[in-house]
Length: 221
Ligand SMILES: [Zn+2]
Image (cartoon, rainbow, N blue to C red; front, side, top):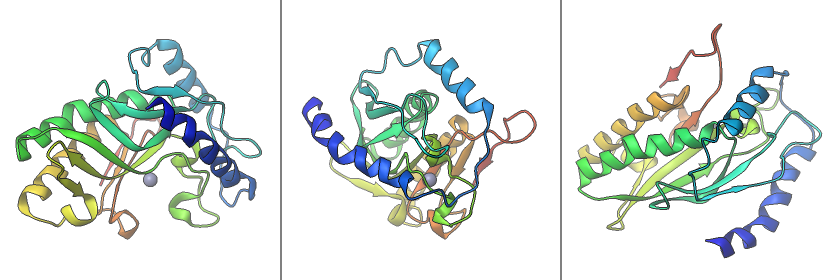
């Protein structure tokens, strides 16, 4: 685990930086809640018990992209469930990914397939880009390391369930993915599935965007 992190970094960092250096083609405004929420999360000590976590240097730079203290998350549930590839996330996302896996993904795998989930396939995490890659759109929550895209799940028996095939696949796969989707809506403020649009035909998007007067308005689609 440690070795793979060391090897990954030189590849990851230039890729992340180059994402921002091409110049912003998105709309973004300064939102004070982001920094406050992140500082409060770090100060709370909520990450103290998460072992498979590496603190990285600040992302961002010439634009509003990034976050003060990004973390690279390689597994949850004490290493029982890997994230592959590792996800670059801000502090508030991490306990929610952990909770979603513990309270929804793992129980649903046991209930529907009688096995344990061992891997979450990550389709995206930090990325300095406009929403849906549309030039001129609002900066995506991915640009703040406040979002995760999940393409599927691997079980202990080697079976893989993807959103692309399983969402409209056999009855059990459909039921599993819908349970996991419902569970995500308990932990994240935005959850988008193939039900939302064609951009999400092959993954779940989850994030912790704040919207509405109290910042608690939710989207679960
Ligand atoms: Zn996404």
